[in-house]
Image 1 (tube, rainbow, N blue to C red):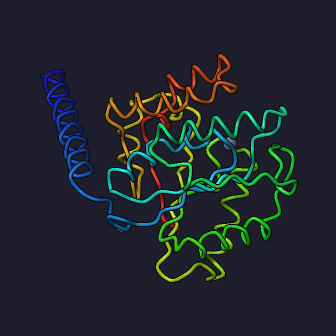
Image 2: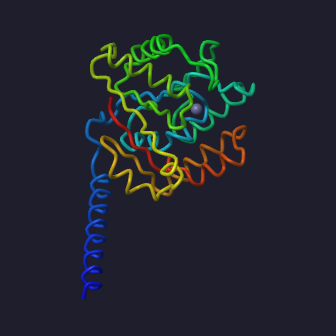
Image 3: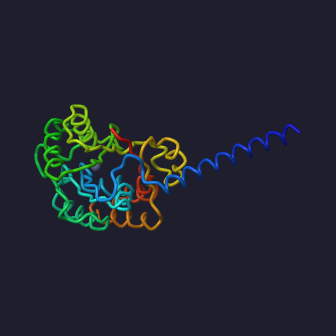
Length: 252
Ligand SMILES: [Zn+2]
């Protein structure tokens, strides 16, 4: 009898979990994320290196396209760590073309102040000043960038968060301009692909983008444009990373 009782309880918990997940999933699919500006929003994705847009932000880029945002991209380096900057700039344009960002909406900063280097701290004030000029000049409503963990912990990613955080906390962003940061998850969650969905549904406070299989193929095509970066471990990344399928974001 005890065994039957235990099995009934386990079945009830499983059923409840399944219904909860299904309900969360349906709500997520049917609603525009609360707080995200609507149709026609001028949205700026801020990245540190060519490939960040495909490797980490593809679900956000394609999710915002569904919401008909006018997306532009600001990349703070040419990704010149191995002296491949010129090649990588071209790869970025090709990847953005696959993701639906026109080249006229892309700005790549190729400046000695912001080297692609995990050991160099970019000056927060310098990054913030350039970012603010770009936001003002383009009438940006929504800025999207990394969070304090920078997904991979790369200090160039974290520098972008520090700059946007400074602009936000000092009240320097124009009225009506909000900021979304991409949630960094632990290494276990990072590499379980779509199996991370229950955790993402549970832990996402603000915005969750999950790609359809057709969109995942598009994200992979964008990633394959970064030919200079496709070493064996990045091919594994493309297969297993949840960031190729799921992005959870929080408002500042
Ligand atoms: Zn990067």
